[in-house]
Image (tube, rainbow, N blue to C red):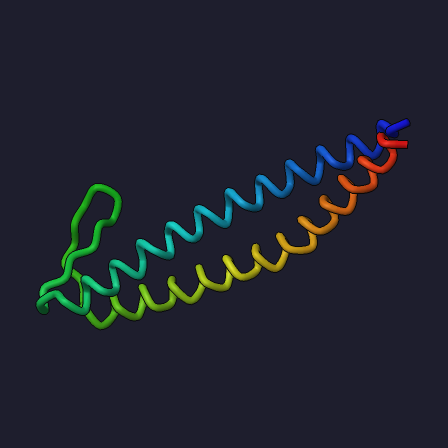
Amino acid sequence: MVSQEKLQEMQFLEQNLQSLMMQKQAFQMELSETKAALKELDNSGEDVFKLVGQLMLKTDKTKMKEELINKEKLLEKRTDTLQTQEVPLMKKLDDLRKELMETVSK
């Protein structure tokens, strides 16, 4: 018979994994936008503007590029960290599913 604790653990792991994957997807989207902004910045003239809330302010192109590069590095680190957490969580969930399937098939 399948234990209630194992089922709860599996649900908990599934929820954690889903949350992790949503965070990772959000960071990947932001990373993609940041890379696109860097590309546009390289192709732009000297006048560069930045949105701050509802204001558009003129900013220094070099500073803006530095900000975007730092943001890109941070987002890559966060994505990598989430990926590192995702792999063992998926393995643990897979192992638990196999264990539950073996218990059910007995």
